[in-house]
Image 1 (cartoon, rainbow, N blue to C red):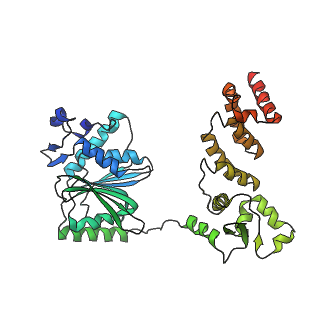
Image 2 (image 1 turned 120 degrees about the vertical axis):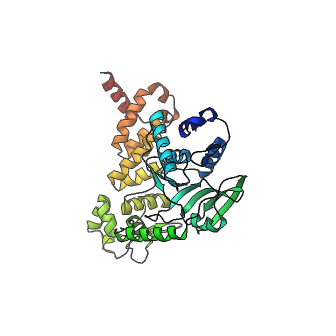
Image 3 (image 1 turned 45 degrees about the horizontal axis):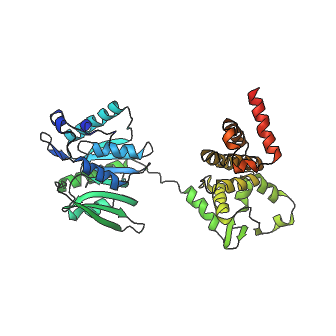
Amino acid sequence: MTLFKREYFLSEDLMEEAYSDEPLRFSRMGFNISAPHMHAFCLENLDVQPGNSILDIGCGSGYITAACAYLAGEEGFCLGLDIHQHIIDFCESNIKKVQEKENIKLANIKLMNRNCFLPLLDDMKFDRIHVGARCPESHIQYLYDLLNEGGIIVTPYGDQMLVAKKQSDGTMSEEFKLSVRYGDLTLPSESEIREAKREVEKYRASKIIVPESTFENDMKSLTYDEKNADIIFPFEDGKIYAHRAVLEARSPVFNAMFSSNMKESEKVVQTIKPEGKKEIMEEFLRYLYTDKCEINEFNCVELLQVASYYKVDRLIALCEVVIKENVSIDEAANILFIADRYGANQLKSFILEYIIDNLDEVMKTESYQQLDNDLINMILLRLKSKLN
């Protein structure tokens, strides 16, 4: 809110009152801008995350629209709606102003002159919805239907501010937070609804819609496919199923194993001893099947170990990136040991430079004291080379 100064969103006649904590009336345009504390309340309860899609109904001055777009980041998107074109124009000019004044880019905003109760051309759904006017009880379900699972809506409803979240089963958890006074949303006329439906039908008839790819989920489901699996990784608490053709294509170690004349490779269903814990092998196999997996500071070392064993070079590099991002003085020597042991050569090169740049501090750590002579000599050789 210090970045999006309220004065950027006001007309000249209201500048003296820019920082009074009260709503202000744009008399000529026929709407209010909310008090700063209401903007803060709405933004806090919307809890916009990077990548979110947001619908701002009654975008007005553009304050919430701009702030939500900024919070959603380049991967996110904010659609601002208003039923009056002169308000859309005012909103657009204010958003341009804040970009120029603060030297920021808000390319992820779209403004549209449209009633929120008319169907959108692309049948969009949203992660967050902010409503700048009171929603009638008869139409609240319409707005709920525009939310994605886990989505949040903040809207005046009756004389209360409603914050509601869509659950995984499609139901809404509702909480009334504040007593408020807002004007009502304008409902479209029957003729407007008919015209909008014709517009949507015409638009959809002109497009061929390609469904979202299901490849990742389809492939991931194969690791639970006991019926067609021909590889089993056994664990004390269950089994993971896999498919020889996938493993053979993705790992040179599996390729060599299955291409050899080993007796085990001739079995219809083969049991293979896993090289990691069950949750690590699950992530490893998910990567083999989908080229994606969850790598974080808690599993990156164990995933690196498995990826190194099976010689999956790209996964090794992805693990190296996460380990590098979480490096610290205390763990630097231990990371050198890990990089050397598992053949993570890019990580080894980085951590040697890091250790040399912070040598006095690293030498005092317990992990450095536990290094073997070969690794200490490696550090000394790199230091000597750098000094020369």
